[in-house]
Image 1 (cartoon, rainbow, N blue to C red):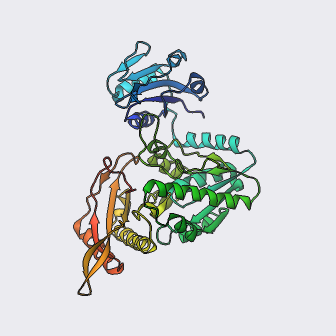
Image 2 (image 1 turned 180 degrees about the horizontal axis):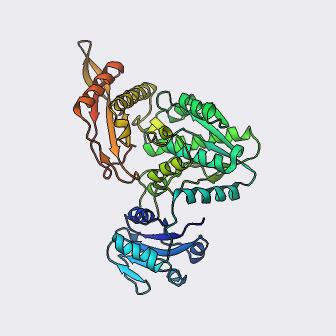
Image 3 (image 1 turned 180 degrees about the vertical axis):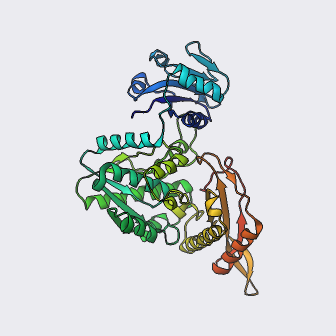
Amino acid sequence: MKQDMIVILDLGSTENTVVARQIRDMGVYSEIHPHDITPDELKAMDNVKGIIINGGENRVVDGQAIDVDPAIYACGYPVMSVDHPTAKCEQQLTQLPDDATMRAFLFDTCKAEANWNMKNFIEDQIELVRRQVGDKKVLLALSGGVDSSVVAALLLKAIGQQLVCVHVNHGLMRKNESENVVEVFRNQLKANLIYVDATDRFLGKLENVADPEEKRKIIGGEFIRVFEEEARKLEGIDFLGQGTIYPDIIESGTKTAKCVKSHHNVGGLPEDLQFELVEPLAQLFKDEIRACGVELGLPAEMVYRQPFPGPGLGVRCLGAITRDRLEALRESDAILREEFAKAGLDKTVWQYFTVVPDFKAVGVRDNARSMGYMAVIRAVNTVDAMTATIERIDYDILERVADRITAEVPSINRVCYEITKKPVATIEFE
């Protein structure tokens, strides 16, 4: 069933996602698009019922105020403007609409139906994937995280054995992560899974690279190269499946918003990419990804698994990656996850992990002065990963975690707890 859509045109607002989620929460699908979309591009979309022109503080770009194409108003769609007075709109607001105002616009003015739900979304995506792929094969990067797992389940439902899953161990996985991926997907779900151990290859490329953006781009580019090599061993691979989600695209920058950070599956793709991309989750927020996984029948432990960035521990081993710090990071993270699970926090905290910065501090070990690394704990709660609050962890739990890390990871002699919200911080440190 085709879902009705409201198109949000970004005219410099920093709250486009707030409007998009408000609309989706009312059961109507919404998408954010650039302000300079053409009438033809707009008309090519399915089931557009109305337009919201969302202005804001970033409306001036390169010294000039941007605006939508005047021809947009003649396309026949109801238009609401926010912070952008114009006589051509059905409704003009100076601030974001409240729920009553939005509901009236959606259902009274636009005559939209509340038919946005996961069952309909999945049916639409299955149809779109089958139409896009035909009888060809799709190569999927299967990290075992929530996003790639949901993509795998959706693609298996759409194209079955045309899907070839590849798990790359880049040496930046959490403790026992690759082993668990193989067990779940190959042995339990019977997926066509290829396992590639590329640890030395990735760490060699990342040697002495300290810049976070450069690290992300190296990891993303190298991933593609690995897939290209695996594809050449197979026949009929024309597509690359990816778990790109909406926050990935938004945070990687738009025409009116600066890049927060490049995501490995958005900003790190090489220009000579040999595949056409299949990204069925690209318009979903993180909580919607989980709802999609539940609808697809994935087990709860997989759907509600800890979020893990595509570059893995590479963006948590801060600065230039070294094998000793990477191992210290892996072990401290495993201890944190184990203790949080014992305390029941794994069921209440959205994301928690450790990072290890690239410097040492003085400490005392075996009654002697010693220099060691610091492990920094981060634990946050969020709905859509666009904003995040801090979990207030009991000090007894934090002390137990610190005692275990410093006792079991000899190269770490300090443990800190990081308490900055998003914004101004991001969830990850790099």
